[in-house]
Image (cartoon, rainbow, N blue to C red; front, side):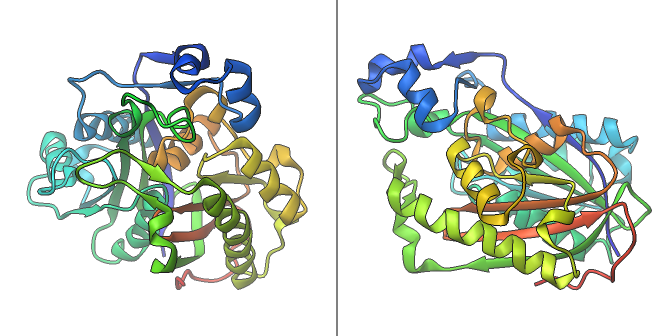
Length: 314
């Protein structure tokens, strides 16, 4: 049995508005807002590292949850923008937090990494009572290039989010989850070691608009719930138009899908946990969902309401 005890986040101070990027992609600032729902994003400075962003979010999460770093038994960290091949940022963050020899696991899964990390953490609580999930991305290093890609350069921001998953009683019990991967379309979203970010936007939207609602419905069905019984949807913040499509597909009011993409843009794997930290989820049933490179996607259901059945994962 696993519980979500708290969330945290960190966003760099520098604000990059649409007006700053519009001339670089040959578009108007208003066009960017209309097409994406993004008004501005945060970009970290050259001295900032993925591990540094993740550490700040982790400390914020532990502080909000009232848990000391020494109580954390394992760390799972998602990032698709680590500065080096290996080691990944997980061990660095664990060291800076003072976690000693606690296992630190890297998940190089962009966009969906936080969701996969939460599901893994729910399993790990059987052996490590407190598992810290961290997701951090410095997407600006991938898109802040000249010439800037007119289709993706304006989409992304930097930031980090964190979640504490615990075997002890928490605010929300993890009910169940489903995870899926399919490499057949892996070229649709990619970040080569020797080049900039590349994405087939139309293919990604097509896959995401189908796969996210399907995963949500699948996860909810496993715990005998309908979309209308979910109090709040906390999704990967990819594009405001996509979030609206998902709400329509599920038949739920768009207001139930929390959105902060206008302020932060798409922060890849960090976005879902940043959203959760900012939303300050209220008691009730929550549904997390994400889709990203791989392709990887899935959904997780947690609730502070009546217990349905133990989580057994998908």
